[in-house]
Length: 380
Image 1 (cartoon, rainbow, N blue to C red):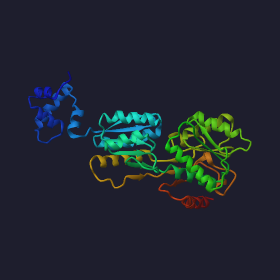
Image 2 (image 1 turned 90 degrees about the vertical axis):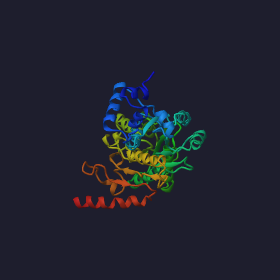
Image 3 (image 1 turned 120 degrees about the horizontal axis):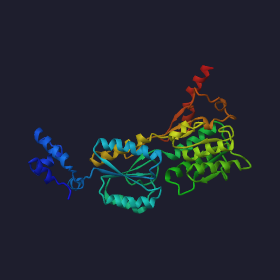
Image 4 (image 1 turned 45 degrees about the vertical axis):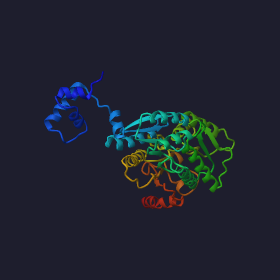
């Protein structure tokens, strides 16, 4: 049998109610008694039954978070931000990973509901109908994170506009002189984030009258998938000048394959990613990509969940954390446009960080570069 609160009370020569008040942090206990009870708790190794306390208070102090995979940096960063906020407020996280399977996510939701969490964090907006029914019937606060614009959210949303990020980066790279682009996207049941990026890429291609016939490569979301995309691009009779990868993982794999094949990046083939993983700026050449403050996104999700749990009115149930286009060496074009002819140097390093998000038009991108061009002209 485990140590009980009655055991602690007998050892400390106090009532069980006094031990309970010490555990709850009540000030109605003398310092001497508190110290004696705490010493007995340590001596006996007593651990409070949080489940019983949670049932009495209708709170468990636990939030369930379901992420697609444990090993990816972007999901770990969101959990870091979420945990920072929740742990500061005495709430812990139960993490489940669904392996990008909405059916597995449904099972995890059902299992976690049996453990009575106070709220849920889900990644993305694609779920089974049963998952939606279970969560809506539970009445618990839910935040869907990482994507922003999808129909009929379960409850609240904290994320960024993957569609607009994809659209804007195509416009930016087109202005840099890239004309024949190939899109590299996931072949295995893409999630809503990757699907929206693809929609954004294709929308921009239509706006710019870029022919994408047979130039959407469906590959595995891995280094090997990126390598396959390079091989397919190089086998075309009319080569492409840019691989637009839906993830940094595929983009990094593409850069490695170019190095193995002796293909110069970006002079023979430019490569762009999405996610701004830590390797993106350490790669040679450094990778052009889209960056999101994922730790900040996790913190915003945590703050929103806290407001909902405590009954505080949330000022907004849809929060846009925005995105940043990081233009780096891997897409420097040597063949078109005034900016494209500028030599990439260590001094300008990461060309310009273009603030976006909140559905800004691509016209804002051009204005954001005027001041940096003036600075470089002054140096000349």
